[in-house]
Image 1 (cartoon, helix red, strand yellow):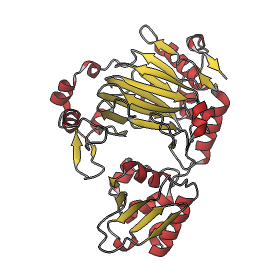
Image 2 (cartoon, rainbow, N blue to C red; image 1 turned 135 degrees about the vertical axis):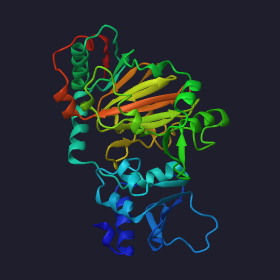
Image 3 (tube, rainbow, N blue to C red; image 1 turned 90 degrees about the horizontal axis):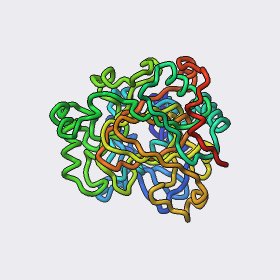
Image 4 (cartoon, one colour; image 1 turned 90 degrees about the vertical axis):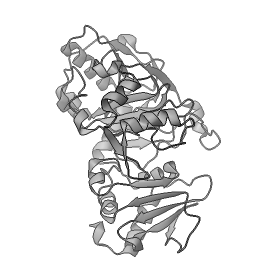
Length: 388
């Protein structure tokens, strides 16, 4: 167990793991790792042409660009399980969770560099690249009204087998789809959604809605977007996806936040399982890129359950990322009540056109193939255009 090794060995292990897939940023910057219950294990990591670490200077008044605070047990768990750990998970929370101060993206990159894909995860991405078209001109859609469970399952089986995204219009019929933000505040205002990544304090539905009103610039305050936190336990059964077997999916994730204008609320990434994104409130614009475009979108090589990309789609730096100029994306608009199915390996990013609330669930390829009817359906192919 990593928890048993000496602090100098731990530092060397961290530097080696972080450095395996490291790509230097445009300028030198620093990240402080604070091990709250083992002060002597805390280190400052410098991101230059390579990653180096040193003890944090005593009496330091300037600090690093980002600070990550956690307990030794959680750090050990991350190093022991690079293919499975997720700082947002219940397991991480039980070990004290991760607190982030300062530059969140830089801290997220430090954490990302500790991750590694499993053999099954790599196989899932390779399978997606073989099946998926090189690009799409439009995302096919299906109006769910009047569909039987059998025909819907067949359509889903087809879209997942072919690795083609699909929008199911009017799929989500929960009463909450019709709620206003005032309704959410009245009915669910006291519901705790997550711990604030900076302060550790509980953030409620009311805190986020108040944040929509109080903050006017992206990143100006804490309670602005939940970043895919776990669905509150009391909401799990309440927000099961209709017409689909509950055992198909794992735990739900919540995406609740204010309108983002030109900035992304979810940066470009792909998941290593099939994603089902249910839109409850507001509109989202989602841009998708096929699995085969991993080089054009500068996908990061350190990942486990999801694979982020280095390029910012909303403001691409084509000097640093010239291949992105040739990336072929397709946009789809989600309205309240819609469900977007994103097959394994499809890169996607999200703009919030309004204040939004969405719930996502995931199903791996094997489970989906087992539980969905594979009777051929013509409802997908007739709406699909392949290019490339």
